[in-house]
Image (tube, rainbow, N blue to C red; front, side, top):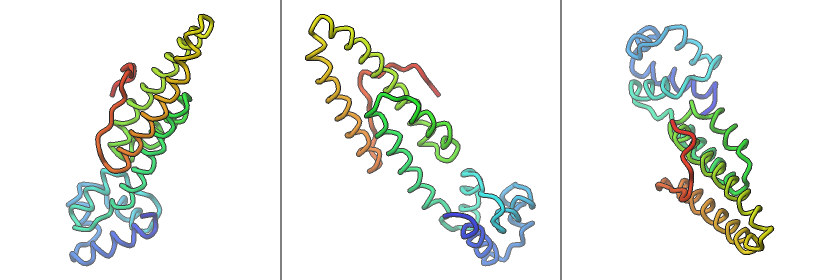
Length: 171
């Protein structure tokens, strides 16, 4: 849900409960000015603030954010198909504060991509011996299918796994 619709929904829910902005701010333990700015659409609240307001006002303010986060997760995992670390790194750095799933999946995807780049570099050296001619296409297919399987698992909310991934980046 985008501003100002989100602000209107919070305003309506607050009024339904019979609370003033000061009452909501006191209950949520946030600044009254923040409530005012959220309700008028001046700012988009943080995910943690949305969770608090959702609980207090007994309305679902997180539905669209969850769907949007799933879309970003799928894009981040799907980017593993190409050994370009910059794509998931940008998504992770930009969106990790929006959803805890993005924050936790980011290092896994980045570690997988770094690992695959290292393995592909090693495989390219084996091209000179001739073994790389067999290994490289098989390795490319393996990366493709692991990425596709993990992207589908993330889309349906299942756990995923990246085998052969070095754990270089940790939370």
